[in-house]
Image 1 (cartoon, rainbow, N blue to C red):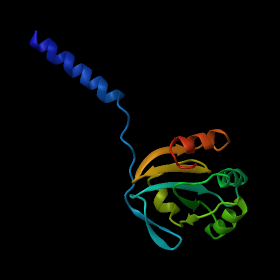
Image 2: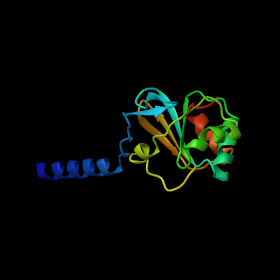
Image 3: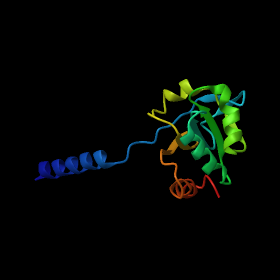
Length: 148
């Protein structure tokens, strides 16, 4: 009888382990943003990967420019980094910290296409953003208190 109880308990625990959510991805390293070291392991930050010549990225940037951000906004151009400031200006985004560290960040944040966003808090990934149309984008950002 004891063997059956132990076996049943082990089976339940194995099932719980397999059904448990994956641990959150964390990123504790510093990157460069606006020419200064920036610690992604502290505070709340939105990472926005974009191609400065991508119209879909521009549309997403313009949608995000309409929001009142409560977190640091770090923009990472995936191509043509010299065009990043012009892209940010054309999109109407404010207070964006631009980072040239796309290759370093791609080692951790794997994505196929841009625009791509990551909501982070204290180095932990809260959610990836791949859907850029409103109202869904605003709802996701508001749900996590990234915007007002």
